[in-house]
Image 1 (cartoon, rainbow, N blue to C red):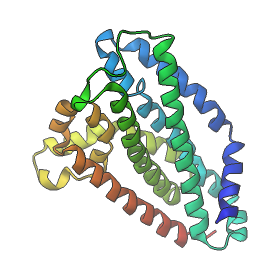
Image 2: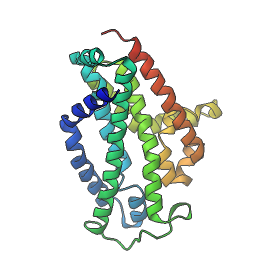
Image 3: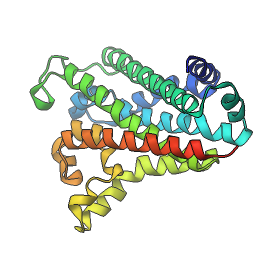
Length: 254
């Protein structure tokens, strides 16, 4: 397992996108800061200048290449030959991408503090009361922690898609459609008023966890679930998609 993890870190370290991503993240956070009005300064801080959406964008690209590119160029054969078993290969990829996910979120926190005191100086204090009667700094840390669950849900879904579809471009495209159009699809399903008690538990609805935490009154009318329910649903789907992804990966013939 340790060897497989080292191999995955080595490959991630040599991917250009992994090093370009932090620069892209900063640029998009700055863009978000300029695009929103002054009345939303607290929301900007709580959401780290909309970093959750940008990080999800990055992870779809990086996560899709983790499997699909190796399937396309048969590099996966070398990994399987040197690893003790397939679960080590699959789990090591997941662990490394999770660590990279944590790194991006920590970077977003650092960028937020930097931007707050440089480009976007406001009168908002970190101790100002905001969501759920808590200070802004606590909202920001909670939203970041919650978004780790949301992004890991996306990663497990991308892993499953990558194991089902060997073409990297298709996986990235489908991933973007699910992540950035999933809300509309989920809303349409729920607005049909058919089997709403069942349909509200669809996995696309769980991707609204971070957004609902930061704007509960608006999103709860769309998701029909409270924060705890979406959190538990997300954790459940992470486990389901992870297992399904591994089962598909184990059955693949190379």
